Image (cartoon, rainbow, N blue to C red):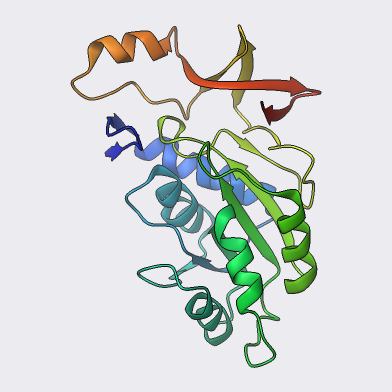
Amino acid sequence: MYILTPNNKEVGVSEHAILNAGYLVGLAAELNEEDRICTTLGLHRAAGLSLGVGLALSHKAALLWGSEVFDAAKVLEVVSLDKATVLVANVNELKDLTAAQSSKVNTSSLRTIIAVASPLNRPDPTVLSETRSRLNVNIVVVFGVDETAGVLSVSKPNDFTSLGSALPQTQLSVVDGNLQVTGFNVSAGYVNDASLTKARFVNGAFNTGLKAKLEGGNLTLI
């Protein structure tokens, strides 16, 4: 299937990558068949597919959509009414979700938030900590781009010191200061753009163009 990136480039993403990325993130978040997943992510982006459909199918869990257009109060209402146990949301939505929480909405069923970060939406450790405290949940941070099926790193629960380490079965490296990704999640390239594909995808590795550093295997953007 094809995904339109923020740079208006179509990139091919395989069903294999979507399902496996979802499965591996689910392991990190300790999902099981009894879980009910509520997501705010749209299916027009790779992360929405991997951390929505891929996550639910690979763990045989129920999947709920918070709202057609993000509305924090409506999302929490869905969590409350459908007793969602896992919430998948963009990191820039967490502050609004925390603000919308009230005694009128029972979110006690919720145990885990998968907070999705991207180059344009980077996590704020303070917001993550406040969300964890206010909603009484564990938080797993996932970072990725469309060219890597929306996922390239995942954190340990409640570790907000970095963007986590490489998704299992993949590898992160920093070459000349740029973050590169190798593994099953890497796309074959851009549609109808051989020159850009040749420049960004080399010997199975994707050059994200992001300035980064790895310390003990943990990823931090510079």
